[in-house]
Image (cartoon, rainbow, N blue to C red; front, side, top):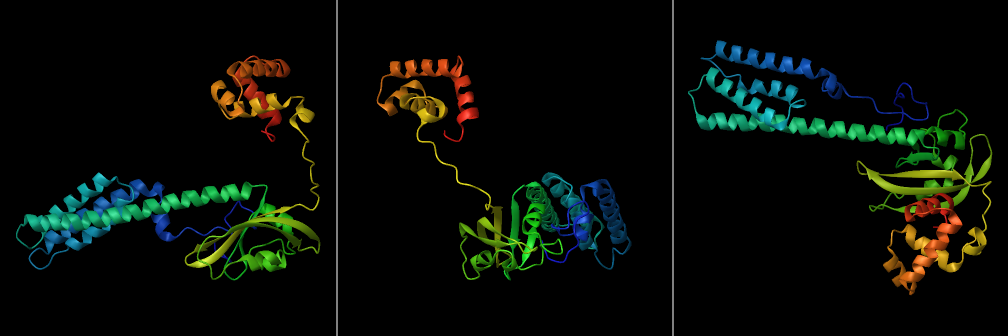
Amino acid sequence: MVTGQSPTPGLPPSMAFPETSRMEALWDPRNRVRLCVWSAAIAAGVALADWWIRPNASLGFLYLFPMMLAAAFLPRWAIVLLGAICAVLAEVFGPLSGSFARVLLEMLALAGCGLFVAELVRNRRLSAEVQQKLRALVETSPAAIVTVDDRGFIDLANQAAAELLAPRDGRLIGNPVAAFLPELHHALRRDGKTQFRAALECKGHKGIGETFTASVWFSTYRENGRPKLAAIIADVTEVAPVAAPQSWADLIGLNVRESDVLRLLVQGLPNREIAAKMSISESSVKNTLHALFAKSGVRTRSQLVRVALEQYRDLL
């Protein structure tokens, strides 16, 4: 994403998307039939023009244009077939005498050009789909997410980030990250070539003048040879520490053996492996499971695992 581009319609102003290029619009899947028809018409026109000026020159190179137009919508075998047809047309209507070697070379050149264009378009489509999914994920995320360019300016921010940092003009993109999170500005590694992941807790500044305690998870990366940084920001000012339970027995009424068996059961271990890990007999494991069934009100192992994950997931 580049600062200064107009936002995509339907998305909040805190997130701007790059505009689609004219070439990408040309190879839009909705233009499939139209471009295939145009490709066939151009190939027929080149053959007719080649036949018309046959004694003087050859226009066989013009078959590259229908190849490039249609390649984005054809499977690989069809691209090779189209290249062979164009090569035969160039040879039949060209001024030179027939040569199998020349037809083969022309077919390889035309098909190779078509396959190259097809792969470029397919890769671009896949990249655009992935970017769109990532943007949708970022925009709908309740966590504040920003990216920072090599100059220290925010070049991507979702709505949650705008609400958390509260810039005066309502837009984070284009503002220096140092104005909101000074430590994050210093974390941008301009000389490092390896990726760096870390977490920090620092003081954050909102655009409206308030300060807060920020917990930040960030990662550095390189884009087009330039260092960048992506970060998830959370306001932990109001978060109070939660005391850890003293024991399983205090929390859910299970003794030590029952809690250990339950934890191993959730990991998917059979009775034999549970017994081996706890250095007890299989019959002891079975007796403990029956006690767990009675306490949880279930009858099967799968039901016990489901109850354990629903009620004691954090501790498991």
